[in-house]
Length: 80
Image (cartoon, rainbow, N blue to C red; front, side, top):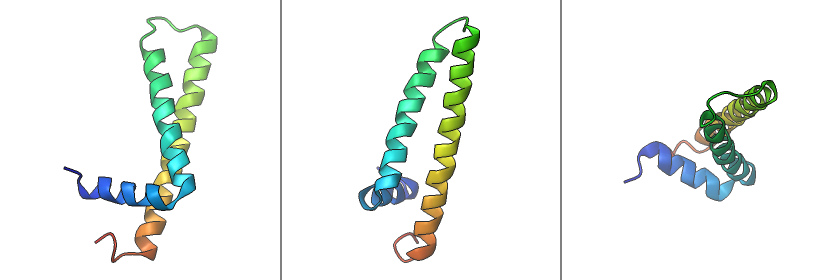
């Protein structure tokens, strides 16, 4: 069963192209990070790439949180 947060996210994904794109990127970044986590010893280049992906993932998460706040503020009746 979807909890309230999942329902909010699903609603916004249907309504907002940017949010949809950010969710897709988030899933991609998570998969890439999981691949790096499977490597026992990372090269310097791999470590830099892992950090870059982590930063991009966090930036995307912040943007998604902002979009969620915007939607909740503009349509509180939908998200109460």
